[in-house]
Length: 125
Image (cartoon, rainbow, N blue to C red):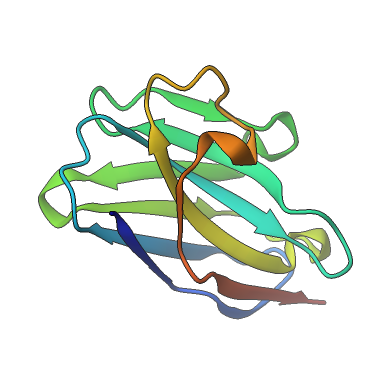
């Protein structure tokens, strides 16, 4: 089992920035890939970005490239999502997820076995 706890969400203004955190516990993460998904009101949960724990390879959804940055801190068993130049459409619940690093898909929900409870990001103008 892997437990994931997100934090760092809140209310922010357009053009601002936020950093979300996800702390993992329960298992060694060396064989895992960790990801961020988000779910806006009335929409399906969508993939944002993922990173492999070993090696740090990343995969970004095209729509967030240039504004979103994922990073990891092996010592703290944590990943982070830095969001720059916030837009209204970034409003969503952001979820951290973990799955096997050898899964065929990087961006499918089925590729991730463990999920956090989510953290709300609300962007206002």
